[in-house]
Image (tube, rainbow, N blue to C red; front, top):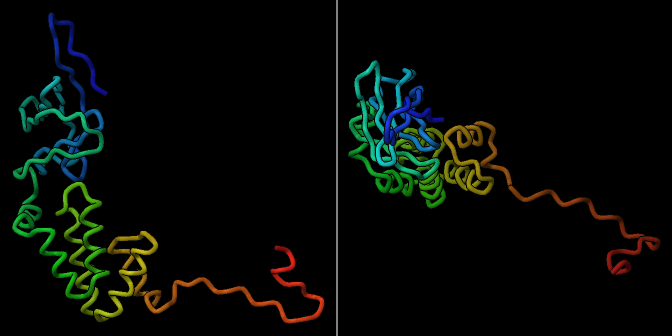
Length: 195
C-alpha cells in the first residue's frame, strides 16, 4: 500500500517501500515495474503520483515509469534486464515456434501457449528451448505425443513434458477404460428397460 506524503500543501504523491522480486520488478498498486536487475532482493522507496512511478535506492533514483493502472501487467525497460535476457531480444517468439513446428503441430502449439502465458515472452524462452531439446533424446514422435497430452490436460510446461516422457505417458492412450459389460442373462433387464 502507498503511504501519504507528510502534510504539504497540494501533495499529490505517495511514498511506500517495496522489495525487488527475483524477476527485477516491484509491485505498486498491483502493477509490476522494472528496476535494474542488480537490485534484486533490495528494498526500494517508491514515489507514486497520478502519472509517474519513481523508484529510489538509498536516496538515488534508479527507475522512473509512466504510471499504469492495469492490474497484473508489467512495465519493463530493456536496460533493466540482465544481459542473459537481453541477448534473447534478438530472438523472437515466432522463431521458437518455427523451431517447435519442425517437431510437429502439437509442439508448436505448446510453445505458443507457454509464450502467451508469460508476462514477457522471453521469460518462456528457456522452457521452450528445453522442450525442443528433449526431442533430441526421445525423438520427434514421442515429443509430439507428449505435447499433445500436455495440451489436452492443460499442463504446458517443461517440467510436465519431461515428466510425461520419463513416465512413458506419451505412449498411453488418454481414453478412459470402459467399465466391464454385464454378462448377458435372462434376469438382466438392460438399459432400455429403464428408459
